[in-house]
Image (cartoon, chains in turn orange, red):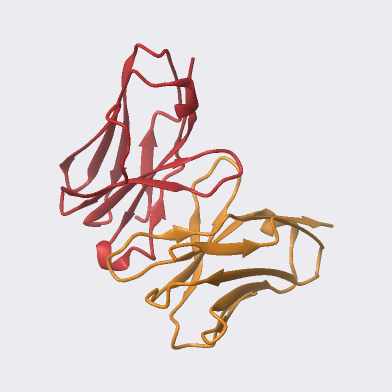
Length: 111
Length: 114
């Protein structure tokens, strides 16, 4: 119940394309769903986060779509750029509880 | 200043050594975390400190010993480690445990145990 499932494991997208990463969870007590971006040799950095009472949140080229009934959420990266090449982790948390990370998606954007 | 700093960047230690990892933040955050990350895996939570008190220990072996000397500093003392402990050790902080979703991570210490 504490797991967050993430797919795909890796993703190759051409520059200018849309990158889509999907996550699913079981625990309906989760109340925050953040996405973290990690470049090689760096720690993860918070990219964008959403609460379950919101169906979509957009920040620049990054959009989270949230489907509460399906217990799924996804990250869309519009106009993907080579600089977006990184590993992306979805996550879930509940109040004062810990972050539960998904397994990660390695995104490569080719020019 | 939204930076979490970690020292050293790299550490190579033998199985009988004692070493320490250090983490510092000056954001006034009251929750601090240690994670272990293996290659191509997500960070794995080890310890959580809230207001300088240990609040979560994820059943980590006693060869890892955390310490929070003050609200800005977090140490991880290492002793008699095994080769399988080689990993990237990440420190993170958040405003409080209620903001656990919004953590600021340091760059990590790359640990190799020989």
